[in-house]
Length: 284
Image 1: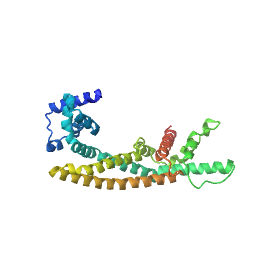
Image 2: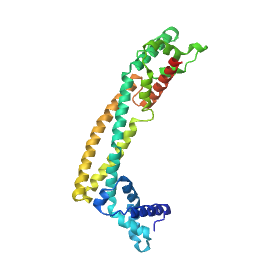
Image 3: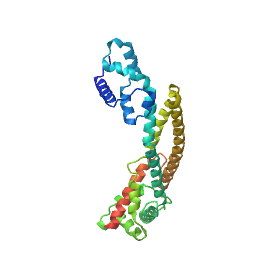
C-alpha cells in the first residue's frame, strides 16, 4: 500500500532491531528507553496520512505495514519522550554557547589591547585627514572600515605600510595579543542567532507537547508535566542570557560605527583579521 520502497526498507530494518533488542510496546518500558531506541521506534510509526491509507486498505497490507499500524497508538508518547531526551542532551551546550559568546563580546569591549589599537588607528586617520585630506575634519568616532583600510594600505615603498606603523606605534604598550585572538577565535564559527532559532524550534515542540498531555496518565503524565515546567523555566533563564548577549552585540556595533542591522559576526571577523595581522607585524 505504501509506495515509498525506501521508507518500507528503513521500517523493516528498525523492526528487526526492535526484535533483537527484545523491546516491549508498553508505556513504562518505552519511557525508560534511551534516545537512540526512541528514534528508531519513531521511524516505524506511520504518519497520520500513512495511517489513514493503511486502515483503509487493511486487506492489502504486507507484514511490515500491518506491524506499523500496531505502533501508531504510541506516536504521541514516543515524540514526547524524544523531545525530552533531545532537550536534556543539548541544553547545556546552548547555555554554554551563549555564555561564551557573551564573554567574548565583553572581552572585545573591555580589552585594553583592542582599545589602544582602535585609538591609534583613529588618531592616524585624523592625522592623515588633517594634513592631506580634502575636508580636514577630525573624526570623533571609530569605524570598522578604518581597520580594513589600515590593513590593506600599501604605499609606493615597502616601508609605507600603515599596518606596520600602527604596530610599531602601539608595540610598547601592547600586552600579548595572543590571548585576545584565542578568545575571539573561540566564537568565529558560532553565531548568536543560531541559538535563537534552535530554542524557537523547541518552543514549538513544547507547545505541541502541552496539547498531547491528555494522552498520558498516571506517573508518565506527572513526570512529563514536571519536565515541561522545567523546560519553561530553562527557556526563561536562557532568554535572559540571550538578551544580555544581544545588548553586548549592539554595543559592539555602536563602538565600531556600524548600524544595528549589521551582522556582528562580520565586525568580529574584520577585527580578528586585523589583530592577527598586527601580531604578525610585531613578531616579525
